[in-house]
Structures are given as structure tokens and as C-alpha cells.
Image (cartoon, rainbow, N blue to C red; front, side, top):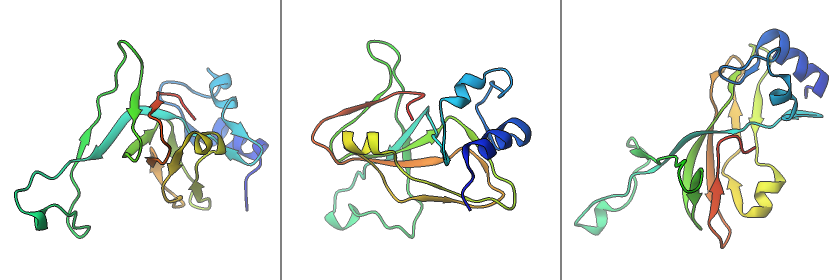
Length: 158
């Protein structure tokens, strides 16, 4: 079953199914309404970005990432001076976080996919993130720039 826009709106207003920190639906409905679609909600980017820490090795056999081991990430600083945001370079992979906190009830699950507008710019949302029923928290987005040009990502982009 897919929730329609009226059901999404009701769940946000009455059950806090999706919340933007420091902004309730009743205080800032326009912030939420901009993201409500006929059968979905468009998550927006926060200022939290990470990338895989590059390996510092002397032997070639140490250069690979063993997925059975924990992967180390480093934060990407979010700039607000000369330009706002971060730059995602061609063939670069990063983790981003949603600005919204998702609070799914025990009888609703969700899936995260990329929007066609960011796909046309060259950004791929890697793997559709399945969000389990009962999950509470922000959503981690796996972003890859498949295009030939660097792309600027800013807080609030959906």
C-alpha cells in the first residue's frame, strides 16, 4: 500500500511520522508542504556528509576494502563562506543524511529512491534504502556522481 498525499499530511501533522528538527508542521506547514508529493515525501539534505577514509598503505594487498571489517568514514566539512555546500566530484561516492527525522509506525515501511531531477544532473542514489517499519531516525543516503561535472550539494536540496 502507498500512502497518498492526504494520508502523508495527516501522519505528519498528527503522528509526527516525518519531522524537520525545530519546525513542527503546525508552525511551518510550508516547509513540509513543499516536499509532499501525490504518493511520496521528498527528503532534503542536511549538512552532514561523509566519505570513505582513503587507505594509507605501503603494500598493494592492503589497498582493498574488506567489507567484513568496519569501514572508516571521515566527515566532509560543510562550507558556508564563498559558496554554500559541498562539491561532489565525478565518480565520487559519499554518504549524506536527511534533514528530516523519520518516525515510522510499526505497520508502515518505506523505500528511498532518487528523484529524476538529480538523476539527470548525474547523481545516482545508490541502492534503494529500505526503511523498516518502526524505524526512528534520519536517513542515510548513498550518493554517487556518475556525470562528467562536479555538482554542488546544499542543505535543503531534495
